[in-house]
Image (cartoon, rainbow, N blue to C red; front, side, top):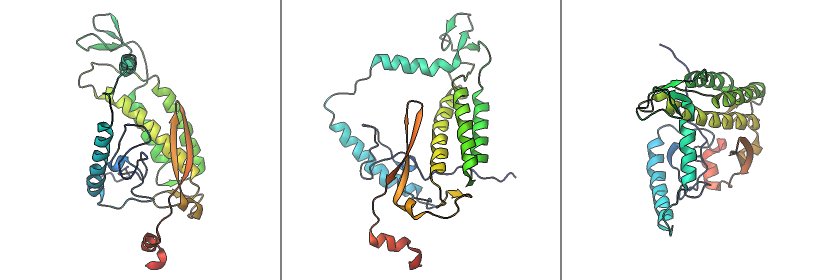
Length: 252
């Protein structure tokens, strides 16, 4: 039996308003383990269902209230739709079985590759290996720098990813865009871990083994604009005295 660490949960996620589940993007709401701010430096076991029930109810009510306040039906730009479709079929980069050029194949969905390209399964394996070996349980700045470099290389290679087969029941097609999202999250994790030069909760830095009191008053947020990711610190609201006593080491 193989025994090894795996990703079971994250202490980060999308920034949301605690009462409504609203994100910083107008009209987008989030609840559950995708949302940040619930767990702090480490996750309490057994509370995922309570998290979903409590914040799912708040977020559902918040989203419904937002929708009710919109005077017009949402408008979708046809040009944006066509651009999104073109992006989705781009990984096929193929020629139809009948020999006619097609971004995503003919009506039957049967396509064949035009030439070599990046295999999404291979990229997935290399991403797993990079995060597991360099951004794992114990971290150092040198490892994180190397991880960020490798993630940049993987991102560049993702732009040349290619798949074959039809559109129906093609798991590699979905994996292409899962990898894109994984690369974004992985970069945010690696850059945030490099910025936080301390050890706290589930974040362990061998080169900074002790907690830094300054980090108890701030969080790290990542924002991606285009192809650039910005890492910033944001202040935490002051903890009430009665809650502080509950978590104080002096009270135990």
